[in-house]
Image (cartoon, rainbow, N blue to C red; front, top):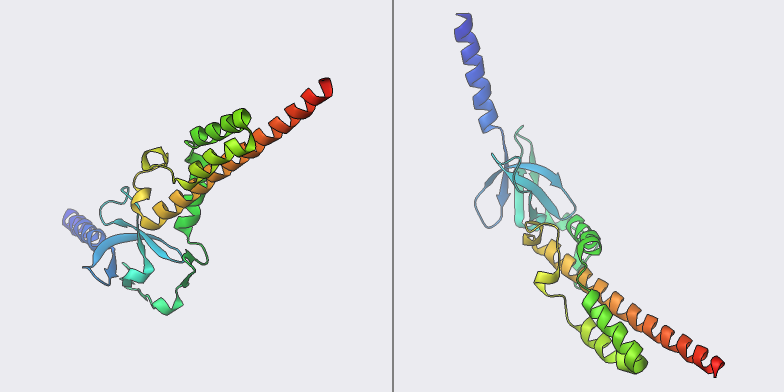
Length: 198
């Protein structure tokens, strides 16, 4: 009888674990069985139910009607309370965008060819000669295969991808214009050194 009771308790607890998940109700698709991991100012981060060690997914709050948690609590998303998008940017900056900018500063390193081209042109042809590649290089966004992002699944999040690409472009432009200034400074220093020795 004791074994039968333990078996019944074990089966009941297993059943409770199987049905214990959060339900995300998107506005334009069917409900998603998930484990909600984090809710930021703009996004709900979750993992698909049964994939707790899997990919961390993200969905904008503006696309969600409500979440029903495993304990029965409900959270309704009234989009009037979300920060508004103004002037082409998000204010305040979302967590995804903030992380993308940090990652771009850390991982985007393929800006060196553009910076080196500008520096060599400036040293060879002077500031005006370096200005042409500086303008050209800073006007062209980094190619996708040069972005060096840390994780392919992060780039599937449109907001993360957009912010990462913007920050990579800023970093590339910063390097190009810094190398123009460095090349111009070296040329000016070399001019005065040569002038003083003659």
